[in-house]
Image (tube, rainbow, N blue to C red):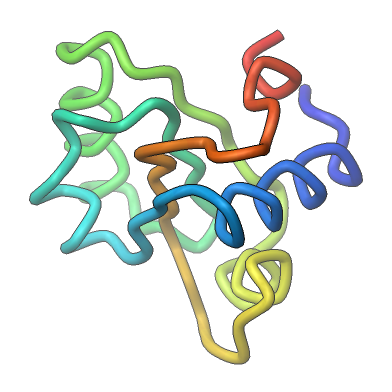
Amino acid sequence: MVDQKILQTVMRKALKTGECVLGLKEVSNSIKDSLLIIYSSSLEAPPRKRLLEDADSQKIPTIYYEGNSMALGKTCGRQHRISVVAIKSSGDANIGLLKQ
């Protein structure tokens, strides 16, 4: 299980200095080039299963975010719901801390 404080720090830095894709539809369309996928507890079962299968087939690590989509949105510094985040380029963020 990933420490939520570390996750928040890494995600904010990746969003600020790297390249990230937000939202299920956008992540699903561009999953191939992702370094890491983070999904919230609010993600419904059928789309979650499909997302995890796609990530597994591409050998992309995934992280389950214990909070709901509103909490994930807040962690990303946004004022709206976000169910899935894909980190494409980490920028200054050390995503290795999350992959442990």
